[in-house]
Length: 425
Ligand SMILES: Cc1cc2nc3c(=O)[nH]c(=O)nc-3n(C[C@H](O)[C@H](O)[C@H](O)COP(=O)(O)OP(=O)(O)OC[C@H]3O[C@@H](n4cnc5c(N)ncnc54)[C@H](O)[C@@H]3O)c2cc1C
Image 1 (cartoon, rainbow, N blue to C red):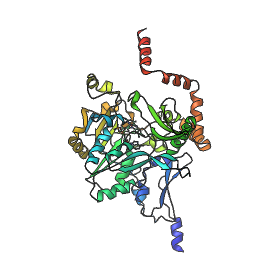
Image 2 (cartoon, helix red, strand yellow):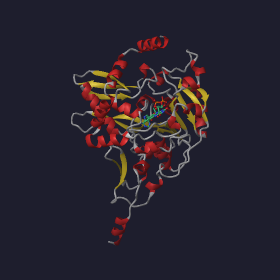
Image 3 (cartoon, helix red, strand yellow):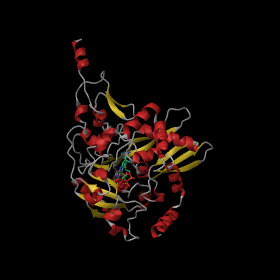
Image 4 (cartoon, rainbow, N blue to C red):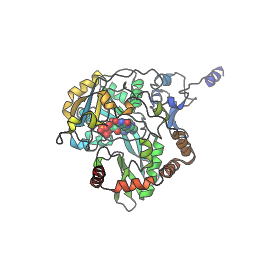
């Protein structure tokens, strides 16, 4: 009786304010009693909640919280402009294919690669329909790498992958784990010690919207198209690396398959993401949006390459092309340096600096600023769901949306010709 009373009065508080939890799931993974689960708040973001009946108050969940405990990141050691030498891999990557070059090395040498995918999960409906769920998975073969390639601009669910990483490492396998910097910090806090066979890669991260926004956004697109979305690419490079264009593949009711180009400036989800208006609260306070990174290697888009390294673009026959995509690589640890030295064969590399990479990539210095409209948008979501957010976007855009739609229909060479004419007259 005394014991039960004592337990009732005990309490573990994982965080005091929402911005103190990045949703990396290290606490969920570390709990030996499976007492913690991720649950959605009114705004659709997932937060850990503790089942008091199962909790033994050991406090491990608090200890592994990398976001709240002292975080000592690495200092950048060497930086590069990078481009994958394999044209096929480059074509389906969002930037210059740095990730697939690194992953290929692991997969060809018996390693395991972890990263984010849009998994086709059954939605429990009897018709066997599947929906695209952003989550981390492990792959073992090169043929599966396409699942991890390409940016998914939505928070990816970690699930059991931290535990799987540990099991593979204990079994002596080489592991590459890629993700947002908070996911890398979460993994490292969970593992609690250094493993020789683990290489980590974080992406320069702008912040993440939640999976529920994305799911409802896709269902709105499905209504518009009259079919089921079976694949979604956030960065389709057919109109060039810099065009923020996505592609939805839709299975139509009559059986055929259609694709729809999703323009970043006229899609509510994409536009609100790019403007940083619908991100997780912790993203606006991100402690990894700085030069001290948790991973061995940081990768991102080399925005501003024309100004920072115009010399490599002047050779039009050279490997670096703003049409095909260019990566930046920041090597943060001795392990990262070792990897780059061993694998130069897979990448075209030119040395650069952190400052040059950071000129047009503000998230290397600071998180996105939380906009005034954030709360307004979240309140709309909690009352009306993402449909309300979508309506708000179109109302705000007003006539602009029609101009954007017309602009996006004009072929690129005609657009350039008009620009040149206006400039010369
Ligand atoms: C939410 C988000 C915000 C980003 N913000 C910026 C930015 O501000 N500036 C910038 O330069 N680059 C940003 N990037 C990174 C950029 O879009 C590319 O993903 C990166 O340059 C890698 O490109 P790649 O060609 O090497 O490989 P790709 O094959 O294009 O990328 C695959 C890699 O991205 C990881 N990944 C994809 N989606 C997610 C996700 N949802 N969560 C965790 N990991 C994911 C995969 O695990 C894999 O490691 C962002 C990416 C994401 C997912």
